[in-house]
Amino acid sequence: MSDQLPKPFVRMRDDYPQIAAAYDSLGEAAGAAGPLDDTSQHLVKLGMSIAAGLEGATHSHTRRALEAGVSPEAIRQVALLGISTLGLPRAMMGLTWINDILDQK
Image 1 (tube, rainbow, N blue to C red):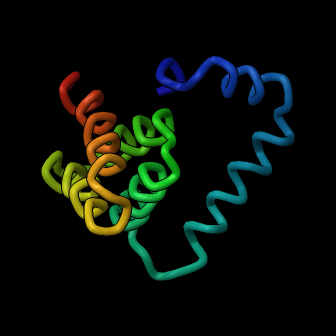
Image 2: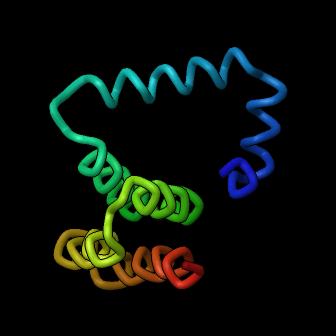
């Protein structure tokens, strides 16, 4: 998976291992802070990535959801659910980014 990470992120992790470890710990603590299962957490993070307009994060969370066993249909539904909240253009942007990854599989 590290070959799919953006080079600046990989370099930051290499150059600043203590910051990378703290970042990882924060993510683990947030994941353990409540009752959401891994699948739900992946889908929430995917939805937030789309809402924030983050293409790289949407790609990453699409890959992570697939690795966790989430179906392509469920992943696409995350973008479609955004139509009424985010608007059609943002939802279609998210769906396009999701399909960038799903179409590779």
